[in-house]
Image 1 (cartoon, rainbow, N blue to C red):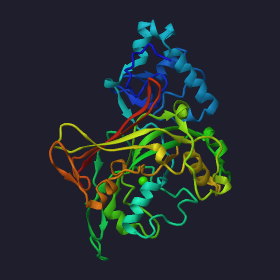
Image 2 (cartoon, helix red, strand yellow; image 1 turned 45 degrees about the vertical axis):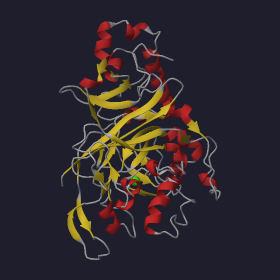
Image 3 (cartoon, helix red, strand yellow; image 1 turned 120 degrees about the vertical axis):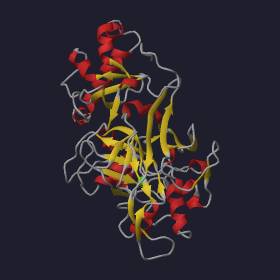
Amino acid sequence: MRSWVEVAADSHFPIQNLPYGVFSTGDNEPRVGVRIGDFVLDLVALHDAGLLPGANVYDRPFINDLMALGPRAWQEVRNAITDILRESEPTLRDDDELRSATLIPVSQVKMHLPVRIGAFVDFYSSEQHATNVGSMFRPDAPLMPNWKHLPVGYNGRASSVVVSGTPIKRPHGQTAPGQSTEPIFGPSKNLDFELEVGFFTGTENPLGNQVPTSRAADFIFGLVLVNDWSARDIQRWEYQPLGPFLAKSFATTISPWVVTMAALDPFRIAGPDQDPPVLDYLKYDKPWRLDMDLEIHLKTERMSQPQVICRTNYKNMYWNMAQQLAHQTVNGTNVQIGDLYASGTVSGDEPDSFGSMLELAWRGERPLVMQETGEERKFLEDGDTVMLTGHCQGDGYRIGFGEASGTIRPA
Ligand code: CA
């Protein structure tokens, strides 16, 4: 399938993708749009022209009201937009006035946080990441006994989730250098990133009810890239016994375009085998892994071009989204429209496929070298920019996420 909008073969945003985001132009209020090639399709203008079914849920600063329409409407709206952009469809293609009112070059828009996020949950679902981090602190038993029986996670902080491009201020906090048990106070010296993939729930589930894996598709609206910024020195001092607190809650960056499950459906793959067998409520009957290439790019202030420091794939995850949602709700907690569930750091088997600086530079023992400048990195310095990107490769097209980027500002 092709669109009359010209889209390069390596673009993240062909007609097969059509992700939702929130954008503004000039002094106008933020509103909902869809990305196609190097353009944003203004859904307010499209609805005003009578080309979208149902209510106008697009003149809003978030896509929550669109998600609230429910799975059947998600498909109807997607079908309508696909039809309008299809190569053979003249309505918008041949109407110069309407086309220039609805199709805006990305260079002219500012992107905003796409979702009003009620809750943020972070899982820990890569066996390689859990093993790497575990082996640094518990060499004899890197994986805890529960790890292969449940998708470990914690409730994070939704209020500090920011859209790509937002500067990240280095956090202050308590740390206890070396073996000390007397803390000092100051800016984090071990600032890190975590490459993750997150999903948004677009359907509510009342308190006291579970979401079985068989119903996950009705709840999962779409996915974004997530950078779970982490202050390792603060984390090391504070995390026992209840887990990370201030080490993670200062900022989390997401990519601006929410890629729908409908667009990602062709990239589902089976597996992995889970041994020991999981409890019944974690069993699932259709493929939920996604074959999605992921990269981390790092650029210091002195570099003119970023350097790729990690190549990995989302299919490396041991626990999938349906299992994460089923586990999250098995105690009856309620799901809201606009909750964000992050995967946990996506790490592969090879040293250049690890999704955090902690692992890539192995706790500072193997500093990364920037080819262009010869600079070394054990953790992030002020002025460093971290950019996550990712896509699924189809036959002649890509379903991409754009990027999730952030630059470190001094404390
Ligand atoms: Ca994380």
